[in-house]
Image (cartoon, rainbow, N blue to C red; front, side, top):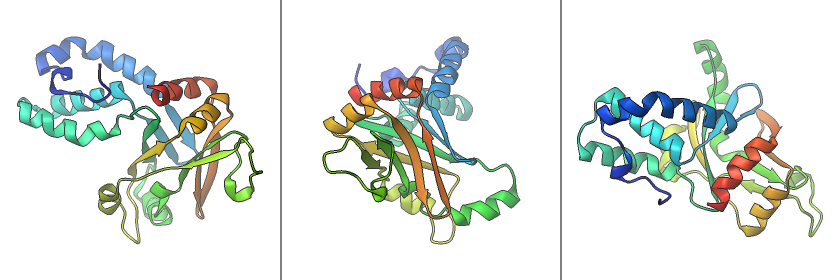
Length: 209
């Protein structure tokens, strides 16, 4: 089974209805293990092949996409969110419950999609000082330039972003050894969350392919 999804991986609507209840329960449980809250209003869900297949199947179901061409379009959009070995991919949600909160926070969070980092080793930011040869490593997220142009203006950001992390072999080893934290290092929003064992095990599966 390849990392990326192909047309044959996407069930037609009748076939999907037969498996939907069981697959949906599987993905809900999967996302629970792969969801990390960072501070009071930001959550990242780390995507994998199953979460993205679910996204495409649900999109096809809701929009009654029946043609191969329509499914191929969805595959082109969503396949980049499936991480290759050595990579992690996440959907970042700014979780705001009211228009008032959105008006307050979305201007404050401009640039958030470039401010996410994994801190592996002792969990401290490199900005705080790192001893030469120490275990601490900071892996800054990467953002697709086209995505950044679409979702962020100079004065306001979007409530959903897609971020990627690329780790080399030493960083993957440090990730496995732990501790690992996920942080947002923005002047207006500085928060950090230590990953639990379950989340680390899930994400190591992505990193090791």
